[in-house]
Image (cartoon, rainbow, N blue to C red):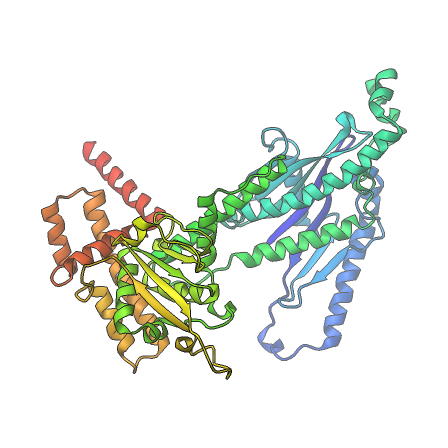
Length: 558
């Protein structure tokens, strides 16, 4: 991450000062003449020069450090600083009191002054964002540290993250807030213990109330120690090494969590929905962390826990599951049989609740992992394995333990389907491969639906043609399914714009359906599929359409 993290302090004698700074130094890209393997001796000399540079900067600033008080000083004048090297990328993380480059020094200095003076949030503790294109953008989190000898028994600090990329820094807000709060809470808790122990020995409140007050000599009335160092406040012998590790990890983790991808064309609806879900999850986690920091311990509601499982389900990987599992849609079709698979896929595409009940959670999750490929990401709501029944409005994929009863209104509903996974009694003791699922389990499929599933929808017919073609590999079938989903998601967008946004009548909608190729055999199933898939459209796409329509209406009225 092309950013810089700094710890700042508001000194009672000298004002805002930078205490500690960590920056990432990227390795220089080799020139064509240096494309060969590097010489180990050259690397060692570069490392020596880097260490010498840090020592020279420390010594050159000795005169400036002499003007500092104890509270403005972090590392001793002779300390060369801290260096960590990422073995994977070759990036070096350097920590010292001030940045290594003069240009960065002025940028960090300005961020320090603004974070501890004019750019503060209500209550003077918490996060805030400010900056501009010229001096960089800053994520700042101000906080107080308890001090037995300070005004108001506390000192004011801030941690700032400075970067030139405004969008990247804003997108990293939840991540930075969550992890910086952990560092801040650790510092505050450690300092609070020292504060309590000092108050027990000599309560300063009573001493100050009984002594004569003089503003001119107020700093010297506290044993001549107007500004204590953060090391003294926390009694942490390895404080700066610990902060170097925390800041270095923060820069590395924040840089690797968001990566750029080359996309051909506009992002798909699945990509937009995944981004929205990740943002919502990070905001929820940030909100829970903030509430815990305030002294409360909130418990997520049942619906919230379902949403969390839904996001984890989207990121599930087949290779992480143990025991027998379904590998692909074709494998699932071979195990269940063509007729039962079509019935199962029909219920999935129509948005009905599909319930799998059995004693093997891994097998059930693998079934959901391959079935979710039939739907847009926004239409997938799953509870992987539950000890009790969940209603259909919470999930359309539900895994249950074998002893969970199905409510009567569900078993008699045509909008649900039950797959019971039963263990097969084996008389032989010979080991059976996990791939041979039929030798291990028996699948009983039941549904109250009486509507024939052999006519449509059109999408299911095309999927079955691809799955039954043995000349197509599993990878080719996956790409074919992706193209089919994109084709029908485009039809969903047209229908949503025409019926929901423009508010056209039934007759006009029927003409659009004919134009989209959704009429004819299986027309009823096609319409049901399109309406269900509308729920999978991203919030960004819906809001974009509504904004465009309102903008057009205002233009016409003017």
